[in-house]
Length: 473
Image (tube, rainbow, N blue to C red; front, side):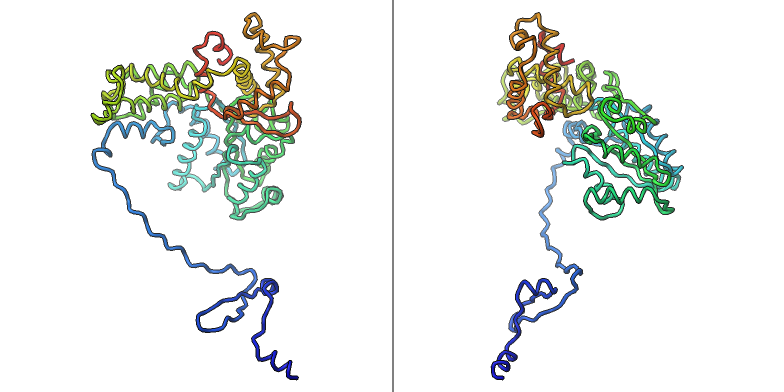
């Protein structure tokens, strides 16, 4: 009895592990013994919001804010969103008509948008979405939702299921569960469902061996009750026929809209629209930059980068800073206006960058490997290509130039490119330097290789080389 009495006088102790299982939380307080407080198992704990001391704001001086060169540099930045998108009226109207019709009728649709990088594909689609959203605000169009899925931002193509489901229902679930739930949701009628436009950018990154992801995303719009509209954006026009099965390409063939590279006149108009009301560039300088880029790729981003760098070089600087420049540069730089000489200097500077210098210093076998990688990308339309296919393409390039002793020296037995083990060593060297990226899965032949630097940089490095420029057209 004494032992039972003494144990009852003491405060009962609960093991920590058992208290967590039963939902018992220990709340210590000053001056009083801790008590056990029961809380609901699934009820989230209320946390005190963080108190953040705001940092002092930095204000720019008026002369910096009103500097025309600073405004020009900001407008010429590739991330700047212009008030309107010039030179894409025809493509804009085509996408606008298809989306507006599908949203108004409440039916599903598939639109395939293709074109080389820097031709305004994604920008045009987003401009169409903004115009349609304004129409919704004016109550001239029924409400719709919009979600963007970028293939470059997902580590696994199956994550696209989770992204779409979380956007539609606000819950994060596993990809497999999200796929099942989306199948059920789009298969059943729901009067409250509003049309949903899904922008699938960088489509070539979502291609898988079984093609399940793309099949589902292009199958759901065909269901009567889905009201799902998919806009797929890729870099090549014939990707469905080359990489996707017939059951997918047949669904994607409903509406196709192609974007061609910008011409020199179009690039001039784009640059002029960014510099409207700002007199910092000569018309001749703009024409030169646009013509050079149009002859290589028609990439508007490259033209903007060149002009932006030229504006930086032409911007007047303090006397102390200007005195550090060499005598040959003083005559053309920091004079306030971008002239032909400044544009030429900017382009030469970009050609003399450390990356350009490194690409030019590579051995011929590695240059042939890069040419084969770009050629295979152009042929397949997919950024990632197998080491075996790249090796075969490199062999064909060497055979086409077999009359040249330099190319003949890198051919192995039977007029073939170095064996797969040698090609693997070439890819490893380029991977260590950050030029390419390797995905080590499966056998050596099936290893996936992709370019980590802009394609334009590779072409610029070899376009003035009489022996190599034909391989990088």
